[in-house]
Image (cartoon, rainbow, N blue to C red; front, side, top):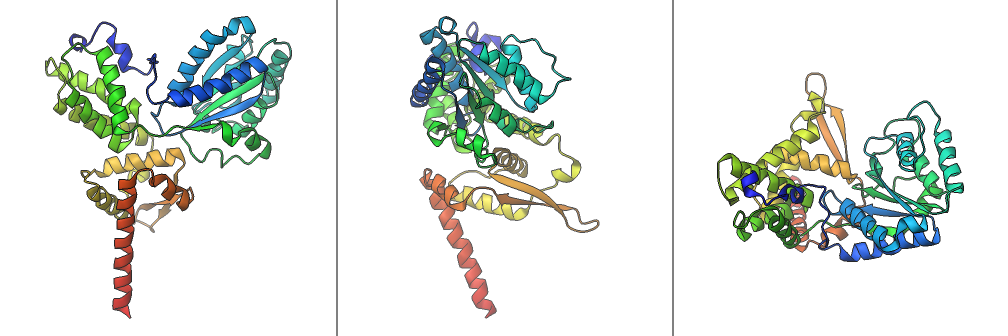
Length: 390
């Protein structure tokens, strides 16, 4: 693949790359920088919530803002600290331990109570002449293990004026599921920032910028970039997935000895990505959970995709999408036995208000119209059957 890349081009095909000018997130970053400045300069406590689907620029926006604020405010001079922690599958205690370690406090990872770690943090803040801002990514994955919940952790983060936080989640129902009113009130609506999925056009401009930096001239054409943008724009709006597919396409082109990336390479890379993504999502499931999904769901999806002029998808891809929606907290799934020897069926339930879903779909007029037409068709069929039985 090296013959396709500029020197150092690998960086631009990785998640480590933070663009000098993040496209289509300028207003969000400007707003967020205002919050960060208030926290750090005036010692104001509070929590900013970033929420949105995977690959919509949440972590990148924080990283860019972190770099910018450090340069503009000269944090070392004012005594400010910004710390990033990925909370995926960590206990509340493990997150606190990471925070303390980043603050230079040496304390064993295990063997102490939650309260001990909290006392260490409060003692540090009491004697610290500055402000600490911590970003906890994948906050919805904190507290799945251990005695203490994510609410216990969030309560700690709101108790000291020298401490503030940014929390990042893919789960749109995360705030709704917080029961402690003290914690919920600390995450105000005016400091909640929603990241919407990238459109096809936005994907194109982001990918074109990456391609110009990563690949040698002539390796990838505009038409190929547009093909990838169309796939990602229609399927997920996930720019992280787009970069992964782009990297896979470069590997496929190199494997066949080609000097350029073609549309066929992009299509093959997308199929490979879907397959590996599906494996990653469901590999840990037991055999009973890997059973074929309800044909009713599949049939309705195929009908809607047909109305939108989109191609058919396989059951494996459908499983992936249902798993992703479940991960976002938009739907829930539970299993029910069909009786001895008859297997297990999976039942899905919408976890957000139907009206909220419809309002969100109105932002995608083609999908909304197709959905309404499908609903009308189903209702018409039900009415027809009802009349025939009279």
